[in-house]
Length: 153
Image (cartoon, rainbow, N blue to C red; front, top):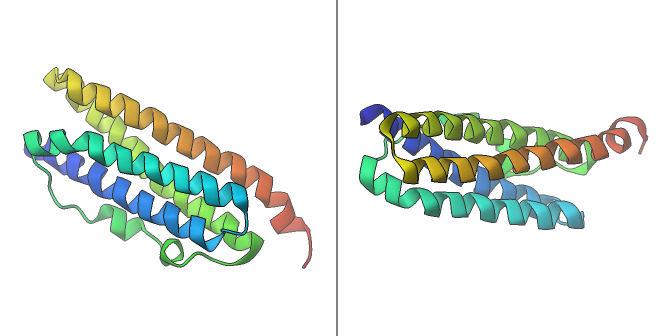
């Protein structure tokens, strides 16, 4: 299953990158309680996704892929400052979570083709939580945008 191993590797590395990025944004914007606590919780979800994926990695293997790191902006390692910085950081998280979401979609399709019910359940669960992560990013962007774009410092 070499191609499935590519996507298993992509899911594993993308979830790790998303978790690390969420923690960086949480720490960088810790003065905003909702951002700190929600990003910390969402990072825990990505950690859980990797744990759920571990038996799949053992079964199908995992190819080392560089896509998540290529997409990871420096800003996620070092969050931007201020209101506009938060907007940009949330956009970067959204982009990364979208990669994770589409990866789980592809894995679910592969699991259906293989008739691997365990993998299908993992993919569906993780994809549902990733969709919730994306929804929070979109909602928080909408909340932050007026303040960041209209109010002068």
